[in-house]
Image (cartoon, rainbow, N blue to C red):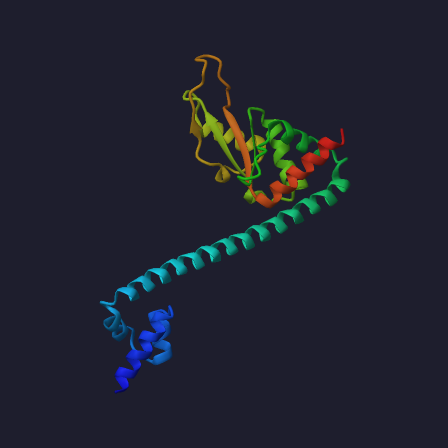
Length: 220
């Protein structure tokens, strides 16, 4: 008798759109038992499909909500970087190293904020040494976070050029990426030392640097 009453209650709850899990908790009936009861009931299968779609929609809304929260968090984070940069700009805008470094980035730097990489490339070792100093002394970047790489022509010795660039721009060889060999457009006019790239991956700092650049340009 008890089983019959439970089955009637189970069918009533199922018609109201309850899932197996919900019915199981309410009636203390195993899901396997419920599955057997509703196995060949067409309208129960329709309810199952509705519940699946409802679950998908709920998951989608949760994902959208989480993404909105994440965007808000990062937006606030980068707004903080902009405010910090604006405050610092007034203190450092007349510093010779700042002026040289930000002007160099204006001309040679990667301006894309999305990739979060502060990066310049050049054939002039003095220019890249200056930028390394700018990163450490103005941007307060730990030297261990500054990386470098070399683009070489096929006829250049990789180890020799690595020693040259490491010594010239004062970045240890351990912090260089593996050199990349490139083919020049002209067979004879080639750069003797290749092209060196100095970079730091730091999106917060890049937001600050781009803000400094905007403020620096606005001063003209």
